[in-house]
Image (tube, rainbow, N blue to C red; front, side, top):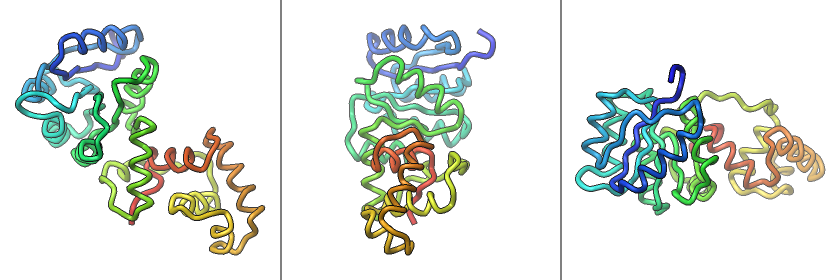
Length: 223
């Protein structure tokens, strides 16, 4: 279909590939152009078919999803890789993000979440499952370095002012409203007012959601 998002599925389970294909092809703007049963085949088909998005499993025979992602992103940096896996271990999450994956979703995700993630990574943005985003936030607030992919996104702060971004950065560091107020020489009530504006602009309802959103967008990066 002209104008559709071309997908390559990479998973060593035939039934999983068939089920995923059936789910995502319900959307008229998505077309599966190929299927790979292991990492080697994924790398080869990525070269042959030039898909827009590779939906990649982690654990596959021979070449793993991590190595396949690394090789694909090295050769085709504009080709998006969306990880779809049952594994949310830290070692996999950060290895894949460091390899250049544009998104990380769990196989427990609903069909509409998967479709949304495909469209998100195809548009050049990062798509992370909430649990994975939580790991990224934890990594950031602990002061550890984040994968480069998290800061390689254009910074358009969603209408937030510089003051609101200052507050969001401090929230990301784990500071309380009182501590933020002291740091910026404003009252607790003013901090809360800014947070309310941030929540409204980002369409979130909590400090954690706001920070996760900022991390997903690449607004907050480790020093």
